[in-house]
Image (cartoon, rainbow, N blue to C red; front, side):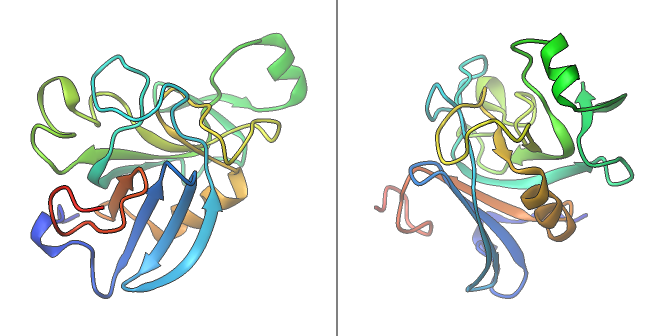
Length: 183
């Protein structure tokens, strides 16, 4: 896996992900063409990079690890490991209030020092993922603990395309990414 360089983003030919927290949408791009668009659920606490905030970080990231390729849909992950459980309504009922991490995990790492990498703003150390969620959880509204939740079927598609090293741009409605402070 090659870590992307900020000066090379977004890629002109390869797969990259855009996550717009203001619209609660994930777009999967190949160069300048949108291949897929899915509703997501980002942090209920809003946007922010601070450790312990429960907020969804912004800026350029990349997929550091893809976890769960050989697991069943609805596999339950705890500490990035399948615990042997498969989500069901009965399991949900026996664990009220649990923040379910299901099916697959795409673990993000920040690319911007002081913004989403290093110190108290490090997305990887904050365990920021794209992950599946139960079917009764809302999409299109901010409701997560800082991660990006997707429907399991949507996550499976993204997981097949966004291999480790894939760039991910998280933003809150910015219309450009190549100039600091542009809107």
